[in-house]
Image 1 (cartoon, rainbow, N blue to C red):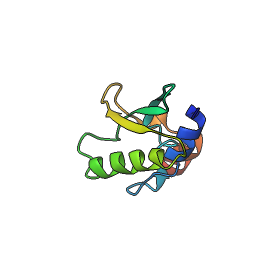
Image 2 (cartoon, rainbow, N blue to C red; image 1 turned 30 degrees about the vertical axis):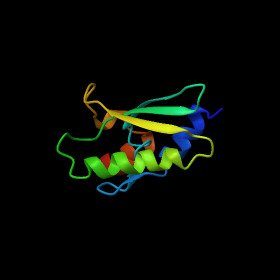
Image 3 (cartoon, rainbow, N blue to C red; image 1 turned 90 degrees about the horizontal axis):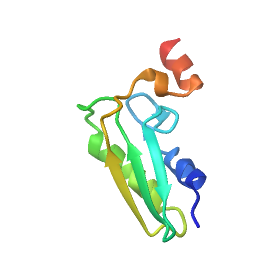
Length: 99
């Protein structure tokens, strides 16, 4: 069975090119679910609704998950509530971006 930790690890390879940090550290991943058939559901957001890389980041996330050996499918759900803000990012990212 695929673990949530494996999925988070795979997703952490996806870098938001606008800020140079991975989307897990940025706090853009709201949740990961893996069912008994190894189908993965990722709930995520983006830093803004107008993000020009909206489609690409979703595609990269899905591709990263599908690279995990044993994953049958991956569904990406983009949500806008709660709205993302910098407080959701890791301490390292906050230090780098906010000084």
